[in-house]
Length: 504
Image 1 (cartoon, rainbow, N blue to C red):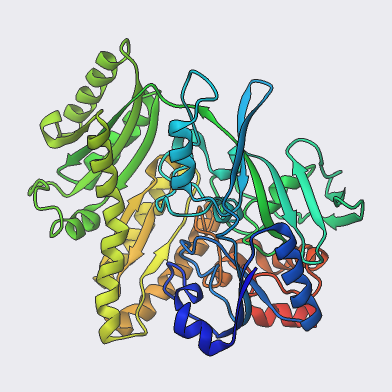
Image 2: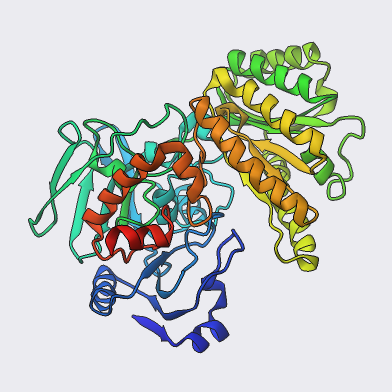
């Protein structure tokens, strides 16, 4: 196992390991380890326990909430645990077993060329950054554009191998270990019995990645999906696969106004039964894209990106339905880009991915002049019947302040990414206050403060808005049961000062 020691050595040669896509940076670390096996991980964990050194777990560093950014102590990068073991069949289901450090790109490429069956299978979770590593996506319950049809990572995880802070190992298979009410008891690989109390707060019945999963009679495996590395280190994963769509029609439809785009979406969601993706671009997103994509229609200020599965017998009906819905909402096929060739699908998806890229570039330029600035990224989802109310609330609060903002993303799941781009310190303070206000509104509407990005180190206060002091206390009891020295991913989910108060 390669271990880099000393702050100066790490900063001079490995500075990128102290950051993730959130662009925040924290303290200096004394040790940076690159394990190549579970034995290496257990050995380094033992070292940290004996020295009482906080340990941050890092994988792809593609998160946007600071989850992989260390406060201090040591950092463990899992990138070298990157083996794909096998595809096996379990009942009627094909499953892929692999290590935690395999990237999504590597999974997609492997399955493209694998020949375990005559039909093509794939792993359908498609987070925006395909260089993300599978262990990180499990630890955050990541989702993506196709989660409208396929759901988040949780839906596809069939087993996990988890190394706990005390060095014990759990082999967890879905459907094998359940809580009795809110009491959960299980054994490690060595037969050591562990007991915990499941939190009793209510998780909203929507897409969410905020805090520990908790339900009466829940499956043990779900506690570790989305735990953000605070309960254990995921070393191996088994994923379910599904049949690859026969054909995909990918379209980017432009509209005169946001109202037309929203009406088109609500109709299309009802009528296009094989839709896989619905994504929304508001006027702010179109404005950001214009300097990069010069051929964007000049008189259109919003768009819907959709993907629909089809075959030879359904293509004509699907095309006819789309044309009808476009016409009914003041658009047309002439104002729509796309097709079903791989190159066309990739072009549309790249336009979608250009939105967050452009936002980051814009804020980076402003940050050069005023380092305190960063974007305010709202990751809220609400129940379907409250979706328009949430959008209206955003606009009611934002428009009078003349703040630059954009709403885009997973409209199919009532989950838009609202990004506020402050231009000065006054706007930055206003934007932060608004984020808190929006979080409170979402909770009142039965929503979540984080639909897919997690909490990390920068959204603590929103987690408390969602679950209250009592809910946070119940989460901390779970944390304490698994990690009594509070060594793992300190600062994720909970502020460090709160951990110090609880653990002493």
